[in-house]
Every structure is written in C-alpha cells, then in structure tokens.
Image 1 (cartoon, rainbow, N blue to C red):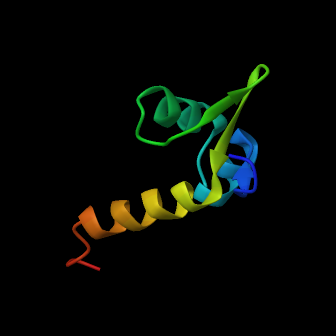
Image 2 (image 1 turned 90 degrees about the vertical axis):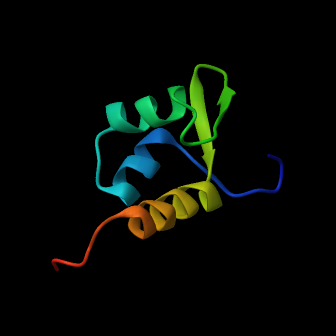
Length: 64
C-alpha cells in the first residue's frame, strides 16, 4: 500500500462513528480490506469511503 493513503483502526472508527471493536470485526470478516503492519492494521482510506457508500446504497432510507 505504498503511496496509498491508509488509516489506523482508530481513525477508521472515528470516520465511521463506530467503536474500534466494530472496525476489527469488519476487517476480520473481510468486509473492510486491511493489511497488518506489525501488530496493527492499516485500512486504505478509499476502502472506508467505498464501504460507507455501499452501505448507504443498500440501506432502506425511504422512510426518512
């Protein structure tokens, strides 16, 4: 991922408005791609925004 902007789990959690545990679950279930760097994960920034966009497209927001 050299040259690709990547985020820590804490940064992803802040952007998504969820806990770090939720981000780890998304990474472990392969819903969110990540690479391991030492003992931590890095998530491509673009993957976070793609996941959020797809989640919104799949949501039923007719009642809003």
